[in-house]
Image 1 (cartoon, chains in turn cyan, green):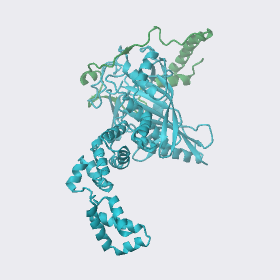
Image 2 (cartoon, each protein chain N blue to C red):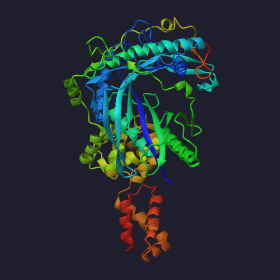
Image 3 (tube, rainbow over the protein chains, first blue to last red):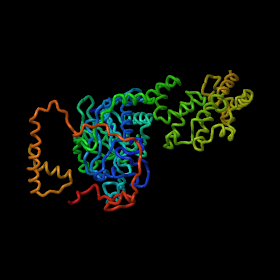
Image 4 (spheres, each protein chain N blue to C red):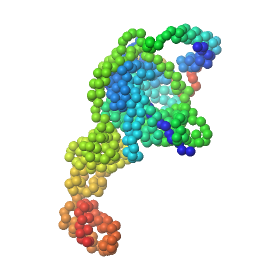
Length: 483
Length: 100
């Protein structure tokens, strides 16, 4: 039987504010434990939380960018649970009156050649939890002897975005998460770093026989710390569920933990995570009645979003959809591109060097575009040198590694290594003649109609000039002399 | 609505309370009485009354995003029964429920 998966995401995003959600403690990351705290975020008796207006604004902004309706009446609830990551034994969150709901995001599946729409159920605001360090049991909660709590992160504004179960394959979930990250980056409301934990993914997933409308029993996967984990974890879980269903086993609704090293998901002990939160309106926080004029004002400050930027890249720079999608996948990459083009390099050629060569180096080194030694100036210079005929594309490829490694400008590397392209016709003609002389067999083959023989002869010229001969000129001269 | 012993056990577990059998029976009766009393409200016609979460007619109490002084680590940990490496020490999280 053929099965299909049903996938929905919950994404937590830490907002970029100076102070916490309900108190004026600082939100700095990486400080000494329990130094960014005050009586409010430590849950001391008698303290009162007060809403940070900037966090509301940032959430409204996000809601608008995700095509949501913004609630004119909204409220905070208490989510009650016992777990040492919160000092109060409840988390201030939102329940039935979230700030934004009913939106959607369009996701281009560029490689697959279609566009899919993912519904946004809701966007709400809550406070982040503290950080736990487990001592003993190899740092895993299961075998730990005791744990240490750091409340620096407790109370940092945390936005939760919940999608509809609209995704069917792991790569759609990955593409959606990446698109969402790009949108939030362009809004500037979070640094959405998976590494620093300011963007966290939880996934719900079930399987059903293809054609059946009813959902299967779903599991939740936690600990997906990268886009790669998201895709791998989902692929594993879908396969596991299909095998279980085929073997006549029942899927248990549970939370599962993804282990990146073993490439498997396993049951998290669920008793401790009983979903019985007894939400009730927080009596300390009065409701929010947002002024439509304020929402209008926020709408008018929305920056150019990835979709618009992508369309503009196609129109302004004449790029194909494929290029525009890849370049606008992150704000940093789109900014990089525009800077390189603004330095006077050919728009399509800059795109090619970014999405092929630069991307493969970044991939291999697992770096982001703004973390490497190559800057827009490097790419712009490289492209201009190729277009001016100073170096061949082949030489450009050869020096890319050194440029990536050292951050030296291509003009410097070319000069140091003496790689300037030979475009002098008489100089190349002499070498072409020598090659024809030395390879009578290939010459005969070519004249006899074997086109590949020409490639061999071009290669010989390139070998003799260490790749510096202008390839177009070599081709032209060889053809002339052989005809 | 009657509260069963099982309900009491569940609520007690959520609140991390260890109750004796006598207490469970006693609380089941008391909780049932409380719910019954509150249930009287549903005898009224409340179709046009919005749910009231706050008794005061106030909304939109906000603060600007400005940070203030934080506690020193020593002050923050002053009430901690046990501390280590600047953190609050808490007992084993996953495992057998601690006796109460």
